[in-house]
Length: 234
Image 1: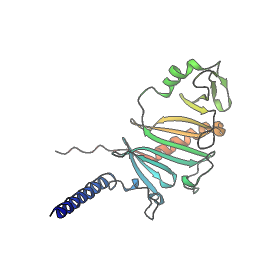
Image 2 (image 1 turned 60 degrees about the horizontal axis):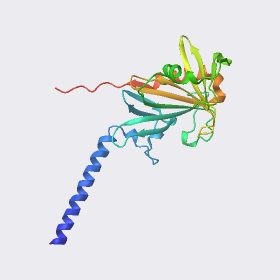
Image 3 (image 1 turned 135 degrees about the horizontal axis):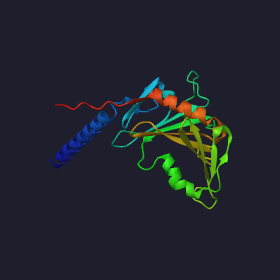
Image 4 (image 1 turned 120 degrees about the horizontal axis):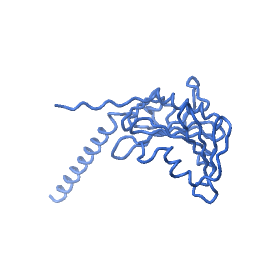
């Protein structure tokens, strides 16, 4: 009798575990099967388009551009990384990001929840400017270069500021090689009220900054869709 009771308890425990696991799986993955980035025959990266919901937007992305989808354990997607070749030509078949070993001719795009705090312009004026050494230097392609004092906490970066129309563009460039290999420059755009888009490119393409910024903005317009609010019942 005692052995039978132990067996019944174990069976009930197993059924309970399977039920909970199945519920979690159905709740988080079945509404959006594209989150299951497996490597089998059903790998969604083999599909033409991948649909990803992030905060207040939905992204409809060519699957061959997706480098990584980061998802919270008990929540939705909180980061989407894309990688595209530069110069970008949507008509040219690109290798999947996991096969790319040389990132010096790639644009790296990261969508993530918009952080709280000052804008890039406010950060430059309030945080970085006090550490800048000397006057800015006028560079090619309409950029002004700002160098930090060697004793400052920002001695391993430089800032480049340019203008597109009446809007200022703030490019932060690393003086050290990144973990991907090349030295990178970056800029941050506002994709929506709740999502930011940060793009990186190799420093050697700094002269192409206008074309890169334009390409990123055009791609953003093509793939982003505002999420419709869920209708309230009753």
